Length: 135
Image (cartoon, rainbow, N blue to C red; front, side, top):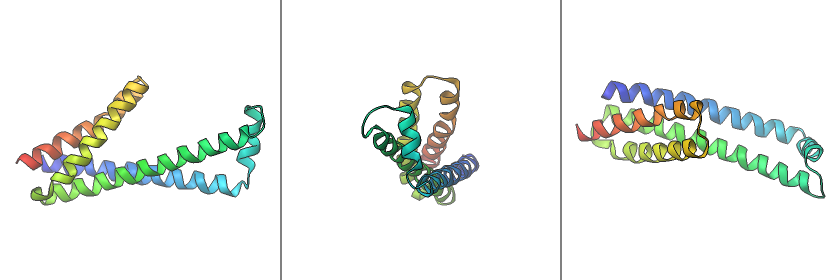
């Protein structure tokens, strides 16, 4: 179980780093556009201030994407720590449970094969962390 937790934790770390970089790059590109994102958004949504609203929603979604990346990185670090020191597995189990709940909510919100596949890593992470904690 320790090896499985290490492998899944490394996957969490890699995924988290990729998501975090993707979010940061998009924020930098959005900011570098100096309002270009707002003018593009106005093309799609009519009305006064609508472009600013869409730009705000875009920034919020990018912020949530960055939080997702940070959460995945924390899960990966906690999983590696738990695999090396089973006595410190409680935080990994807690974060694994949160990740599992968020994955199920995402699956319920958007039922698709891709969402179902994206639930595999949180399920494995939670199972391995729980077994390492018990063992």
